[in-house]
Length: 262
Image 1: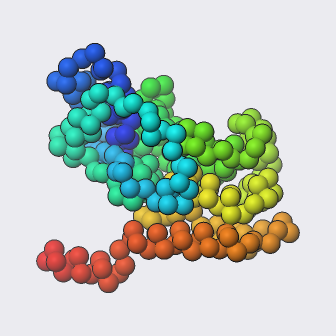
Image 2: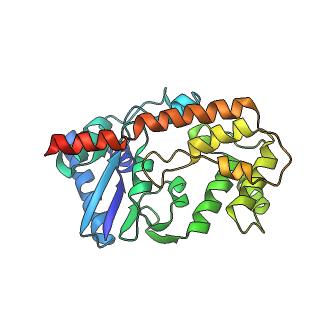
C-alpha cells in the first residue's frame, strides 16, 4: 500500500499543537505523526503533498479562501513544511492545491490519509487519522459527495453554495438520483445560474487526473432543464480551459523534457 499524505494538515496540526514547545520538539512530533500513520495504514511506500501559493481557483473566484488571509498561522508552520520537504521528500503543488495532487495520484494501490472531507469525493481507500477510521469511497459515492457540496457550499473555503441549503437538505435533494446527469440537473435547477454554479463547482472539484478542472459542458448539453446557458458561462469556461492548458505540458513540451533528460 502506498500512503498519500495530506502534508498541509500534518504540518498545520503539528504546529498548532506545539505553540508552547521549541522547534526541535515540534519537528520530532511531526516526524512521529507521519511514522504513526504509515504504520497504522501498513504502508510500504508514501507520497506527501503540500499546497503552494499559486492556485488556479483564485483566478476563477477571487473570494476563494479570502477570509483566511488575516488568520494568524502557527509559529512553527513554515518549519514543519520545510521539514516535510527536506526529510520526507514532500512535493509542493504549483497552480493547484495539495488536494488535487492527492486526488489524481489515487488509484487501486494507494490510500489517501487526511481529515479533509473534500477528499471524500475521490474514489478509493481513505484513512482519517483523527477518527482512526478507514473508508472505501465508490465512484458513485464520490460523485454524490461532490454534488452535495455543490448544493450546500463550503464555508471553510468561502463558497456559499445555494442560499438556504444545509447538509441534510442537500442530501435529501439528491435522493433518488441514480446518475451524475440527474445529480447535475438537480444542482442546476437549484442554482438557476449556470455561471455561478460553474465557478463554485470548479473550486470544489478535486482533480482525478492532471489539470482536471471541472468541465460540465457535456452535462449541460444533455440537461433536461430548459435553461439557456449565457455568454458569461462560456467566457468563464474558456478562461478555465486557458488556465488548464497553461498548467499541463503539451505532447511537444513533454517530448522536449524527455530529450533534455536524455
